[in-house]
Length: 260
Length: 349
Image (cartoon, rainbow over the protein chains, first blue to last red):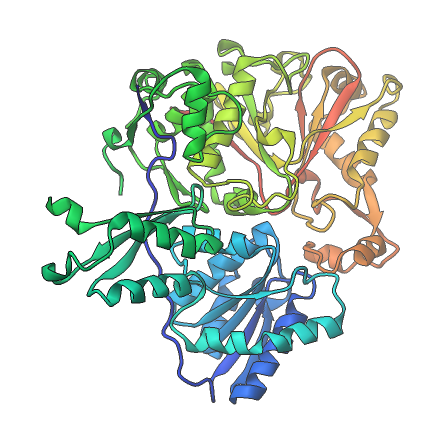
């Protein structure tokens, strides 16, 4: 029997991360606060720790509501605050993505800042990391720079938060200085794997609802076609490596099959 | 890019209900209840009630970035068990949810249990067999049940509001399965709710993203509206709701016809009811401040001293009155998710 699939078409526009920086010295870091309890406290301390370590400066701590006077986590960053970030910061730390709607809109803000060329780290928690992964992939930026701290952030005392921020400093610096963020660690591993056989992998899209990620295998030199692992093997390895990022199934378009 | 509709066709090995459900669930589709197979014939029958291009892109639903077309909505309406005559209501409800003030990205993603309530107004209520009378919130009526369910399936399949990822609801709520009711126009002492919002069409749909109904039971207030009001106000004055820290939130006061007539007989119009509840459902500003680290309040509320009793919303117009249900002394209030606004639209194909 033939039926219609119920999920229709999706917009598959892909976003890109801003270029990473080799050194953070002299750069201006801003904290974009969505008003979640303790978010500003945690992120400001992390930014200060990063500044002390790298020679960057903490240039701005601002709430995301109009005029930076207030914040509501369940709406996008106010346009005037967004423009202020573009003018006064080279790097942004934002969050906290520790609930549903705040994660959705923090992911949205992060993607928009990255689109403008501002490397942005999204602070989330161990419990909401899968939601970040799913929403970031659905938004077209699965490689989002996500800093994962222990859950929860709200209701935790100041000393504990400071300790967590200090402990996360290396990871925070790493997210700004490497080309790869969250899911991309997994993707990069896979690309390295096939690169040794003269091939490459490109992500086509990711459906957060079903957990299906589609990739395209690229084999520039036809002579390498037989050196690269079979599609089924690649899909199995990719699915295993990307599982922690909310990916349940990987489907690879294999040019070798089309040629037959 | 929109593919040809034929690209959406897939093969399943049987239309036996258990096997169809299993085949769809294996692909991550469905709401846990049995589904009707969306065959091309059934989808075409649904689309026959829509007048315009079935494949015209109408909106993009977040977070999955699913593209809304009439055909995509029709597929989900078939799955939900809708009869074709309710399809214009499903389509209008989905289009209303796509309006920016609804903030559907937030509604879908939040840990709050919010579900979109669909309220049907006007002549289509009777024509398409919606229940506006006894037990209007359910169960038992196909039109109410399937329209609400079709909207949920659109959110699951097109918007990607899957529990745990696109929908992070901590507990969810039963109205996330289906949430549709009809205004009881024939027993309302006032003009249609849609008309009161400036939508002067034969049929209309309102969407309000909120909680389950909170019951209000009053047997005593027939001769004294203050007794009914006191109970409604006490159901509203709660610190546990998103309406507490977010002052732009709306309230839907769903009056049973008997309560509505008791209030109307005392000479009260909708705006009087809203004003009274604005004035009487209150909590001291200091109590709010003690309980919330961040208050999304209107500027005027921030100026109030701690001992000043503040209303449960920033303006009386945010308290909306609709008559629903049959005989008896029950009404309900439906709090909002908060960062969302209701939308009322004329039914269109």
